[in-house]
Image (cartoon, rainbow, N blue to C red; front, side):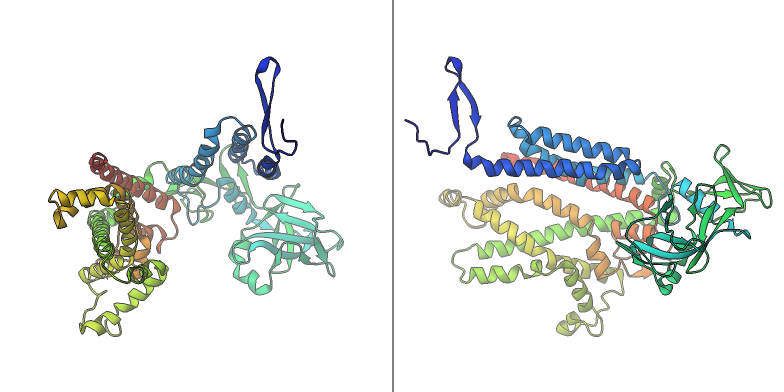
Length: 538
């Protein structure tokens, strides 16, 4: 007879003697509630952000959000497709945080996106036309309050406008146009004094952001624009420039000058017949493979590329081999049961790994100071470590060795302790004791475990930007080539080219990132292929 107090999941016989559907017991109710709550949050989030995506016409992201939502609902709303419950989260994370950034970087590499080209063409045209707004005698005047829901120096900025002839009406002005009577606004003597969710800019902040504010022109339904006049007033006026979308030209109605699009370098500008630009503003445009051509044909880059690539390979190789051998040596020593105080020694050895890397690099940078550095004081040397390329590279390798060996020590310790003791005992009985046993038994089994980690560590050091940037800054630099330093690896060298004095060139930096991704991937693939023979060790 069944226990009426039993709360376990039960099945009832169906007609014909078959087992019926499973009914959830009381123990399954919390899991069911968690599932319902999770799916409710997913669906609710998708519904909540849909209007914003539709307003921005972000159809790609809108489709992606609902595809992800449909996949999660289909996977977790039913008891079927059990393997998918484990595969879907990892697959989504892989797609969102690995595949999508790589695809976006590759897409950006074919553009000229960067300083001066961050806006699309239509936004740039609107700014150029809006900058030509002139005041008429009967132009409407507004009391202006400038606010932001972001940074007070870079925006985005919003104008809150109160007509001087109607001090009870408030308009919110953005690049999309005017909105009457926005919520959360506080009026004080015909001027907006506070807005919920916004920071009001003071005179000092307005002056600091004047370059960005000068580019703002609020379009109106009548075709005119509202621009600021000083820090506290604005006026509505008509532009003297007219854009013809069909001919893709801008005409100055005051002088009848026509400006057409012309390619200059990797950017496009509106210029007149004499080649004079109407503005230095440009826009994001597709440049094809020009960024990749620049990497291999620009003499500034290609002249130093091979030497820097060779040093990058040497730096990554020595860093991996050196840290592994040193970590393995300590691991073997402390894996001997005859050593007393193993826990204390192990704790001391992982201290360099416990200290944040950027702090360690900055400290080591001071250690190499010629006059006051710790290394010269302890050794009695008088070496200008960062004065020459060779000594600077030695300093980089020593520092990276100190920072990397604790990780290898932990990895090697775990791998050694995972090797069965009976294998070592059998090897000793067969006469393969001491170093011979280590070379023929222990080391091959050790490599089976650590080989993938060695490949990953090589890839990390191949792009170890922090070690170079924080320790030497890529220097020392020679007067003949101030863009390529003596310790620069590929990533630090291209960072200086892409984000140096010439301004931020994100499109070019993306192209360099793609090239480095391919190079690192090819090297890693070759290394994995070389370690395939270890699969036969077991």
